[in-house]
Length: 276
Image (tube, rainbow, N blue to C red; front, side, top):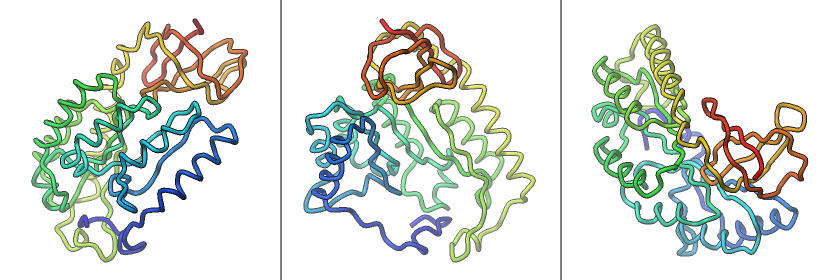
């Protein structure tokens, strides 16, 4: 396990639910009219039960004869590297959101080694090059820890460069805090003011990158799933196949419906469209 994580100490090893139990629960929800489902875990990629892996489980779920979207929860970077074909196959399934939450944690190989994260940034970059070619509209979410013990300014600079290259739509930034019973607690700690300063710098860089990250969606036409009321009167909120936030003004239809729309305006992470 990673040198900084106390979850395994507190909760023990992850266990996988019986696939029949999962599928029965999914079908029960779909019969109630649910249209958006989350397959979630601390690490979805480790799923294996009764000889069924994550891809095979997802295939059985999406083969259920209902209209819905399925979002896959957090995937460990090791899965991206060692089970890449499986991940590609999952995202090719029509009912699966093209949304990937993958916690990279640092752009420095030296820091990753101290974390006991068993991958190199070069391996991650190689796989993302292929992912982006295969799924050009893939939405990416990642996690970064600022101020891990002995993280140098150069290590942090490499993390900044990696985030600039990756251009994730969602970035969860954590300030390192030593946890009892972890190896990282015994390592050389960084001053809290430095950790805070690095967190602020990375947040600023990320916010600046968001300004034009969704411009490619301007004038896009396609289906979205209308999920709930929006922030304004007669406004609806939904998501498209890439899990993008889409707002519809003057929507008088039902919630839980798939409708065809055209994007007329892009504002940061949000897309604004109309029915077509």
